[in-house]
Amino acid sequence: MTGSSLATLLVLAFTAAVSPFSLIVFSLVLASDRGARNGFAFICGWIITVVLIGVVMVAIGGATDAPTSETPRKWFLALQLALGTMLIIMFVRRRLRGQPIEEPVVEPAKPEPGWQRRIATMRAPGALILGGATQTWPVMIAAGAEVARLDVPNAEALMWMILFAIASTAGIVVLEILAIRNPGTAASRLDRIRSYVENHRDSVINWAYLFGGLFLVYRGLIGLF
Image 1 (spheres, rainbow, N blue to C red):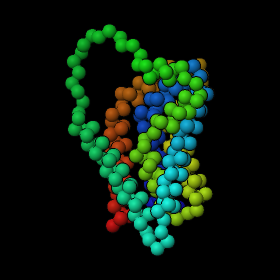
Image 2: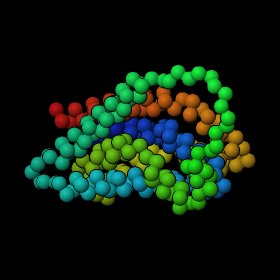
Image 3: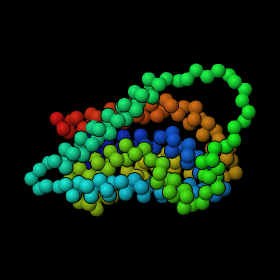
Image 4: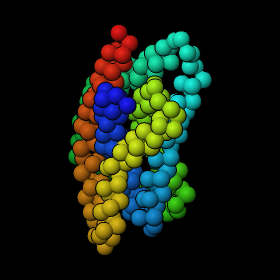
């Protein structure tokens, strides 16, 4: 594990950990009837999915490996460059879209969306699947590519992917701990957190896309050229 690879994984883990969408979904899971238990299942599903992404990337690297060629490493760097470019394009599109001008209109209260009602009544297996589906996929794939191109045994690559997966759950783990320590006030606290995240969602997503995208582009260009 080189210093540059470790820095890359830390940056990607931070980008995934502050994803507003994941935090909002997880706060809804914690507010469900089986909050803390569903939250633990969500975290397990998240970690399992991220590790599986790493396993797939390592398997692809092993399948394309050639003893006398650096093609696999170049391929993973090109993938990181493409993913970084994708994040930057997403950032530019969001910035150009701008904020719609909303006129104050008095509307009747809207019913709760169906997907929120399903989260409120789901059990642990559903939370496990939801945790796997709630991913910042370009970031996770880039992390898998970074681990896959390391010149380490598969067991060590798996260990690094597990550590990355755990690090990427930092944001939702904090919410889980707060819900377990003070269950009596968890609902009101989660409402405040969800409201704050929703109000600052666009700016956080924009900066996460830009920062993560620029880093991946830089990482890919330096490695390729």
